[in-house]
Amino acid sequence: MTKRRFLILLISFGMTGVCFSQLSKNSTWEKKLKGLYDVRLNVAYCPVDTINDRLDCYIPKGTEGPAPVLMWIHGGGWNRLSKDSVSGQIVPFLARGWVVVNVDYRLASVALAPAAVEDCRAALRWIYTNAKEIKADTKRIVVSGSSAGGHLALMTGMLPMGTSLDALAPGSEPMRVAAIVSFYGITDVSDLLEAANRKGYAIKWLGNQSNRSEIAKLVSPLSYVRPGLPPILSIQGDADPTVPYSHSVRLREALTKAGVPNELMTIPGGKHGKFTKEQNAEIRNKVMAFLSQYDIIQSK
Image 1 (tube, rainbow, N blue to C red):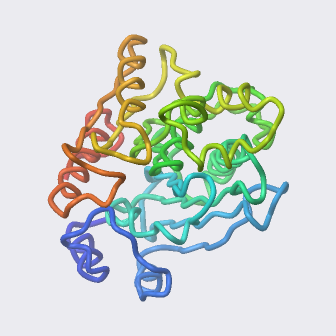
Image 2: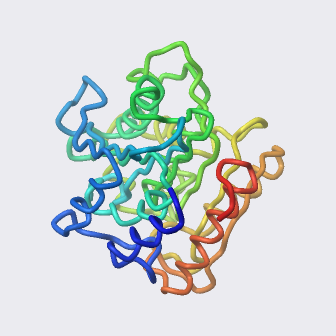
Protein backbone atom coordinates (compact mmCIF):
# COMPACT_ATOMS: atom_id res chain seq x y z
CA MET A 1 0.00 0.00 0.00
CA THR A 2 1.45 3.38 -0.99
CA LYS A 3 2.14 6.10 1.58
CA ARG A 4 -0.55 8.24 -0.07
CA ARG A 5 -3.19 5.52 0.37
CA PHE A 6 -1.94 4.97 3.92
CA LEU A 7 -2.49 8.64 4.76
CA ILE A 8 -5.91 8.69 3.10
CA LEU A 9 -6.92 5.62 5.09
CA LEU A 10 -5.89 7.17 8.41
CA ILE A 11 -7.65 10.44 7.64
CA SER A 12 -10.78 8.60 6.53
CA PHE A 13 -10.91 6.73 9.84
CA GLY A 14 -10.04 9.83 11.88
CA MET A 15 -7.06 7.90 13.19
CA THR A 16 -4.17 10.34 12.66
CA GLY A 17 -3.79 10.80 16.42
CA VAL A 18 -4.98 7.39 17.63
CA CYS A 19 -3.22 4.09 17.18
CA PHE A 20 -4.93 1.44 19.27
CA SER A 21 -8.38 2.81 20.01
CA GLN A 22 -11.81 1.32 19.54
CA LEU A 23 -14.12 1.97 16.62
CA SER A 24 -17.76 1.02 16.40
CA LYS A 25 -18.93 -1.19 13.59
CA ASN A 26 -21.90 1.15 13.36
CA SER A 27 -19.56 3.83 11.99
CA THR A 28 -18.67 4.32 8.34
CA TRP A 29 -15.22 2.77 8.56
CA GLU A 30 -16.35 -0.64 7.25
CA LYS A 31 -17.76 1.00 4.11
CA LYS A 32 -14.55 2.94 3.53
CA LEU A 33 -12.48 -0.20 3.97
CA LYS A 34 -14.30 -1.97 1.18
CA GLY A 35 -12.65 0.28 -1.39
CA LEU A 36 -9.22 -0.99 -0.39
CA TYR A 37 -10.01 -4.41 1.04
CA ASP A 38 -12.03 -7.48 0.21
CA VAL A 39 -13.97 -7.63 3.49
CA ARG A 40 -15.37 -11.00 4.56
CA LEU A 41 -17.37 -10.81 7.76
CA ASN A 42 -18.54 -13.53 10.16
CA VAL A 43 -16.79 -16.43 8.48
CA ALA A 44 -17.30 -19.68 10.42
CA TYR A 45 -13.87 -21.20 10.99
CA CYS A 46 -14.71 -24.17 13.21
CA PRO A 47 -17.52 -26.73 12.72
CA VAL A 48 -17.89 -27.32 16.46
CA ASP A 49 -19.63 -24.00 17.06
CA THR A 50 -20.36 -22.08 13.88
CA ILE A 51 -22.31 -19.41 15.77
CA ASN A 52 -19.58 -18.28 18.16
CA ASP A 53 -16.50 -19.37 16.24
CA ARG A 54 -16.45 -16.72 13.54
CA LEU A 55 -13.89 -14.32 12.18
CA ASP A 56 -13.66 -11.26 9.98
CA CYS A 57 -11.03 -11.32 7.24
CA TYR A 58 -9.67 -8.23 5.46
CA ILE A 59 -7.79 -8.99 2.23
CA PRO A 60 -5.96 -6.08 0.58
CA LYS A 61 -6.96 -5.42 -3.01
CA GLY A 62 -4.28 -5.09 -5.66
CA THR A 63 -1.52 -6.61 -3.55
CA GLU A 64 1.31 -8.35 -5.37
CA GLY A 65 2.01 -11.72 -3.83
CA PRO A 66 1.18 -12.88 -0.30
CA ALA A 67 1.02 -10.24 2.45
CA PRO A 68 1.89 -10.35 6.16
CA VAL A 69 -0.96 -11.43 8.41
CA LEU A 70 -2.23 -10.03 11.69
CA MET A 71 -4.36 -12.46 13.67
CA TRP A 72 -6.08 -10.28 16.28
CA ILE A 73 -7.83 -11.72 19.36
CA HIS A 74 -10.08 -9.56 21.53
CA GLY A 75 -9.98 -9.35 25.33
CA GLY A 76 -12.71 -9.23 27.95
CA GLY A 77 -11.53 -11.72 30.56
CA TRP A 78 -12.65 -14.66 28.38
CA ASN A 79 -16.18 -13.67 29.48
CA ARG A 80 -17.33 -10.71 27.40
CA LEU A 81 -16.74 -8.44 24.38
CA SER A 82 -16.30 -9.63 20.81
CA LYS A 83 -14.26 -9.07 17.69
CA ASP A 84 -16.52 -6.12 16.88
CA SER A 85 -15.68 -4.26 20.09
CA VAL A 86 -11.96 -3.82 19.36
CA SER A 87 -11.90 -3.43 15.61
CA GLY A 88 -10.11 -0.06 15.77
CA GLN A 89 -6.98 -1.71 17.13
CA ILE A 90 -6.35 -3.38 13.78
CA VAL A 91 -6.31 -0.13 11.78
CA PRO A 92 -2.50 0.44 11.86
CA PHE A 93 -2.05 -2.96 10.22
CA LEU A 94 -4.82 -2.40 7.70
CA ALA A 95 -3.12 0.87 6.79
CA ARG A 96 0.02 -1.07 5.91
CA GLY A 97 -1.80 -3.42 3.56
CA TRP A 98 -1.73 -6.49 5.77
CA VAL A 99 -4.17 -9.35 5.68
CA VAL A 100 -6.05 -9.00 8.97
CA VAL A 101 -8.01 -11.79 10.64
CA ASN A 102 -10.12 -10.61 13.59
CA VAL A 103 -11.21 -13.56 15.71
CA ASP A 104 -14.17 -14.38 17.93
CA TYR A 105 -14.08 -17.40 20.22
CA ARG A 106 -16.36 -19.16 22.69
CA LEU A 107 -16.78 -17.14 25.86
CA ALA A 108 -17.14 -18.66 29.31
CA SER A 109 -20.94 -18.45 29.11
CA VAL A 110 -20.83 -20.83 26.14
CA ALA A 111 -17.88 -23.07 27.03
CA LEU A 112 -15.38 -23.08 29.89
CA ALA A 113 -11.60 -23.28 29.57
CA PRO A 114 -9.82 -24.51 27.55
CA ALA A 115 -12.39 -23.91 24.76
CA ALA A 116 -11.15 -20.40 23.89
CA VAL A 117 -7.61 -21.70 23.37
CA GLU A 118 -8.84 -24.54 21.18
CA ASP A 119 -10.84 -22.07 19.11
CA CYS A 120 -7.89 -19.74 18.53
CA ARG A 121 -5.72 -22.62 17.42
CA ALA A 122 -8.51 -23.60 15.01
CA ALA A 123 -8.54 -20.02 13.68
CA LEU A 124 -4.79 -20.23 13.06
CA ARG A 125 -5.34 -23.49 11.18
CA TRP A 126 -8.02 -21.71 9.12
CA ILE A 127 -5.42 -19.14 8.06
CA TYR A 128 -3.05 -21.89 6.97
CA THR A 129 -5.75 -23.81 5.14
CA ASN A 130 -7.01 -20.72 3.30
CA ALA A 131 -3.68 -18.96 2.85
CA LYS A 132 -3.73 -18.94 -0.95
CA GLU A 133 -7.28 -17.64 -1.17
CA ILE A 134 -6.77 -14.83 1.35
CA LYS A 135 -3.29 -13.92 0.02
CA ALA A 136 -1.64 -14.73 3.34
CA ASP A 137 2.09 -15.24 3.80
CA THR A 138 2.20 -18.02 6.37
CA LYS A 139 5.84 -17.21 7.08
CA ARG A 140 4.82 -13.76 8.32
CA ILE A 141 1.88 -14.37 10.64
CA VAL A 142 1.79 -12.15 13.71
CA VAL A 143 -0.69 -13.09 16.43
CA SER A 144 -1.72 -10.37 18.86
CA GLY A 145 -4.41 -9.39 21.33
CA SER A 146 -5.14 -7.50 24.52
CA SER A 147 -5.74 -8.79 28.06
CA ALA A 148 -7.41 -12.21 27.70
CA GLY A 149 -6.74 -11.75 23.99
CA GLY A 150 -3.05 -11.24 24.78
CA HIS A 151 -3.14 -14.49 26.73
CA LEU A 152 -4.80 -16.28 23.82
CA ALA A 153 -2.27 -14.79 21.40
CA LEU A 154 0.55 -16.18 23.52
CA MET A 155 -1.10 -19.58 23.75
CA THR A 156 -1.82 -19.66 20.02
CA GLY A 157 1.75 -18.85 19.10
CA MET A 158 3.59 -20.77 21.83
CA LEU A 159 1.82 -24.12 21.78
CA PRO A 160 3.75 -27.00 20.23
CA MET A 161 1.99 -29.05 17.59
CA GLY A 162 -0.10 -32.04 18.55
CA THR A 163 -1.26 -31.17 22.06
CA SER A 164 -4.81 -31.88 23.21
CA LEU A 165 -5.53 -28.19 22.60
CA ASP A 166 -5.25 -28.82 18.85
CA ALA A 167 -8.32 -31.06 18.84
CA LEU A 168 -10.19 -28.56 16.67
CA ALA A 169 -7.20 -27.77 14.45
CA PRO A 170 -6.40 -31.03 12.65
CA GLY A 171 -3.74 -31.00 9.97
CA SER A 172 -0.24 -32.22 9.29
CA GLU A 173 1.29 -28.89 8.27
CA PRO A 174 3.13 -27.34 11.22
CA MET A 175 1.57 -24.08 12.43
CA ARG A 176 4.19 -21.51 13.31
CA VAL A 177 3.82 -17.79 13.75
CA ALA A 178 6.52 -15.23 13.00
CA ALA A 179 5.97 -13.16 16.15
CA ILE A 180 3.63 -12.62 19.09
CA VAL A 181 2.59 -9.20 20.43
CA SER A 182 0.82 -9.39 23.79
CA PHE A 183 -0.93 -6.36 25.19
CA TYR A 184 -1.12 -6.87 28.97
CA GLY A 185 -1.87 -10.57 28.55
CA ILE A 186 -2.22 -13.14 31.33
CA THR A 187 0.72 -15.55 31.46
CA ASP A 188 -0.09 -17.65 34.55
CA VAL A 189 -3.77 -18.56 34.89
CA SER A 190 -3.13 -20.54 38.09
CA ASP A 191 -1.87 -17.35 39.74
CA LEU A 192 -5.29 -15.76 39.26
CA LEU A 193 -7.22 -18.47 41.10
CA GLU A 194 -5.80 -18.12 44.59
CA ALA A 195 -4.37 -15.65 47.12
CA ALA A 196 -3.55 -12.02 46.44
CA ASN A 197 -3.93 -12.14 42.66
CA ARG A 198 -7.28 -13.95 42.69
CA LYS A 199 -9.50 -12.62 39.89
CA GLY A 200 -13.20 -13.27 39.36
CA TYR A 201 -12.89 -13.36 35.59
CA ALA A 202 -10.39 -16.24 35.76
CA ILE A 203 -12.51 -18.16 38.25
CA LYS A 204 -15.50 -17.77 35.95
CA TRP A 205 -13.55 -19.03 32.94
CA LEU A 206 -12.32 -22.15 34.75
CA GLY A 207 -15.70 -22.73 36.44
CA ASN A 208 -16.24 -25.60 38.84
CA GLN A 209 -14.46 -28.21 36.77
CA SER A 210 -13.03 -30.96 38.96
CA ASN A 211 -9.60 -30.68 37.29
CA ARG A 212 -9.51 -26.91 37.41
CA SER A 213 -5.90 -26.74 38.62
CA GLU A 214 -4.69 -28.97 35.80
CA ILE A 215 -6.58 -26.95 33.19
CA ALA A 216 -5.19 -23.68 34.57
CA LYS A 217 -1.65 -24.96 34.07
CA LEU A 218 -2.56 -26.35 30.65
CA VAL A 219 -3.71 -22.92 29.45
CA SER A 220 -0.87 -20.89 30.98
CA PRO A 221 1.72 -19.51 28.51
CA LEU A 222 4.46 -19.90 31.13
CA SER A 223 3.98 -23.66 30.82
CA TYR A 224 5.26 -23.57 27.23
CA VAL A 225 8.43 -21.49 27.46
CA ARG A 226 11.21 -23.30 25.62
CA PRO A 227 13.97 -22.57 23.09
CA GLY A 228 12.88 -22.02 19.51
CA LEU A 229 9.78 -19.91 20.15
CA PRO A 230 9.06 -16.94 17.88
CA PRO A 231 10.00 -13.43 19.02
CA ILE A 232 7.60 -12.11 21.66
CA LEU A 233 6.83 -8.50 22.53
CA SER A 234 4.90 -7.80 25.74
CA ILE A 235 3.34 -4.39 26.46
CA GLN A 236 1.91 -3.55 29.88
CA GLY A 237 1.48 -0.74 32.36
CA ASP A 238 3.24 -1.24 35.68
CA ALA A 239 0.11 -0.10 37.57
CA ASP A 240 -2.27 -2.52 35.87
CA PRO A 241 -5.06 -3.41 38.36
CA THR A 242 -6.60 -6.16 36.22
CA VAL A 243 -3.67 -8.29 35.11
CA PRO A 244 -0.68 -8.33 37.49
CA TYR A 245 2.32 -6.60 35.92
CA SER A 246 4.40 -9.44 37.36
CA HIS A 247 2.95 -11.71 34.67
CA SER A 248 4.80 -9.82 31.93
CA VAL A 249 7.96 -9.62 34.04
CA ARG A 250 7.96 -13.35 34.76
CA LEU A 251 7.38 -14.15 31.09
CA ARG A 252 10.28 -11.90 30.08
CA GLU A 253 12.58 -13.59 32.59
CA ALA A 254 11.58 -17.09 31.50
CA LEU A 255 11.90 -16.31 27.79
CA THR A 256 15.29 -14.68 28.26
CA LYS A 257 16.53 -17.68 30.23
CA ALA A 258 15.36 -19.98 27.42
CA GLY A 259 17.12 -17.85 24.79
CA VAL A 260 13.91 -16.67 23.12
CA PRO A 261 14.08 -13.20 21.49
CA ASN A 262 11.74 -10.99 23.50
CA GLU A 263 11.10 -7.51 24.84
CA LEU A 264 8.91 -6.00 27.53
CA MET A 265 7.66 -2.48 26.92
CA THR A 266 6.62 -1.05 30.28
CA ILE A 267 4.21 1.88 30.35
CA PRO A 268 5.14 3.82 33.52
CA GLY A 269 2.03 4.31 35.64
CA GLY A 270 -0.04 2.64 32.93
CA LYS A 271 -3.29 0.96 33.90
CA HIS A 272 -5.12 -1.80 32.01
CA GLY A 273 -4.93 -0.25 28.55
CA LYS A 274 -6.58 3.14 28.05
CA PHE A 275 -3.16 4.67 27.53
CA THR A 276 -2.64 8.30 26.55
CA LYS A 277 -2.44 9.49 22.97
CA GLU A 278 1.32 9.90 23.32
CA GLN A 279 1.77 6.46 24.88
CA ASN A 280 -0.28 4.89 22.10
CA ALA A 281 1.97 6.54 19.53
CA GLU A 282 5.03 5.12 21.30
CA ILE A 283 3.41 1.68 21.40
CA ARG A 284 2.63 1.73 17.70
CA ASN A 285 6.20 2.73 16.86
CA LYS A 286 7.57 0.05 19.17
CA VAL A 287 5.41 -2.68 17.62
CA MET A 288 6.42 -1.75 14.09
CA ALA A 289 10.09 -1.48 15.03
CA PHE A 290 9.94 -4.88 16.71
CA LEU A 291 8.38 -6.51 13.66
CA SER A 292 10.88 -4.79 11.37
CA GLN A 293 13.74 -6.07 13.51
CA TYR A 294 12.77 -9.63 12.62
CA ASP A 295 12.14 -8.88 8.93
CA ILE A 296 8.40 -9.40 9.19
CA ILE A 297 7.80 -5.98 7.68
CA GLN A 298 9.96 -3.30 6.13
CA SER A 299 10.36 -0.06 8.03
CA LYS A 300 8.26 2.87 6.76
